[in-house]
Image (cartoon, rainbow, N blue to C red; front, top):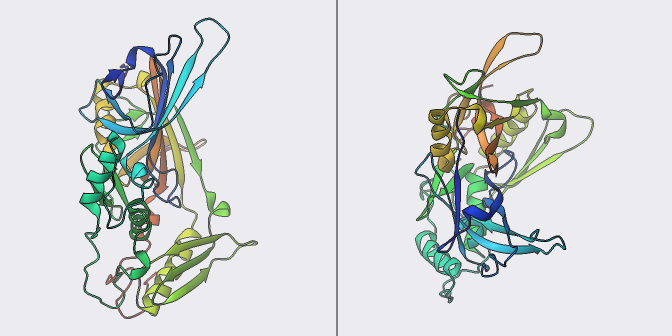
Length: 363
């Protein structure tokens, strides 16, 4: 089996040899969470003040020995733990990715003025995405077709991107040079599977299966500038609201989408959290996982598991996101998985999920 070796660099200085622990997140923990930017945290020895020159805005680069994908974050906080014990002083550095950094800076028609690397990156990315023109929907108005309205004028670049991502049910990743947007509907497969044999799949050591409908929304409220708010219920003893801004200009279509949300969220659909470590898997399998990290969220994965008292079962899930925690000698991943049906909430001009100019859903 294999061990992933991580390297951590802040600016031009390597902190790999004194890093005691490293963790980072990607994607989101739930379908119902809004994209807010990925984060990282690492703790280093600071017995001689090795972390004294780390400042807000410094670029963090995280690499590993099994893939060519580099991850970039920017320092937002440094915490020093000054202990009495000899040589026990440490520092914990927290970073966010470029998407998270963009939300920290006000961007309008005026230029951003600054000298730190984080501000320069914010300027670079702001120039790429502002004014942001999403790849979909088309700018021409059609009944039932989502449009970008004045309600989505930005107060910050990050907020506008966040609203569009939440509205269009998409995800993003940052490859170190540009922000890429990927639709989550009809997700493509990642290059690995998860199962019980390391010869054919990532072998897991923990799987949590959930039917969380009792804790998920049963009252759906969708609001658009043109139509207003439409609402739909699914039966329950108490209300749990799901509020979302959408971009419809046709009442029948917006109500149809609202009804379909409520119908899907009330299904007994299986969710899962799955945990695996590098010490239980081969280099080949781990390389596939690490290569997929930038684009994993929104992709689908096939999971094989044994149901207690039953037989082997295969289920396809959509990866919402995950976390990675590393200490010397071991790296552990946890992926958060949603049922594929939740990504079939509504498709315009579809004989199955919706017809333009009608409220037909076809279930």
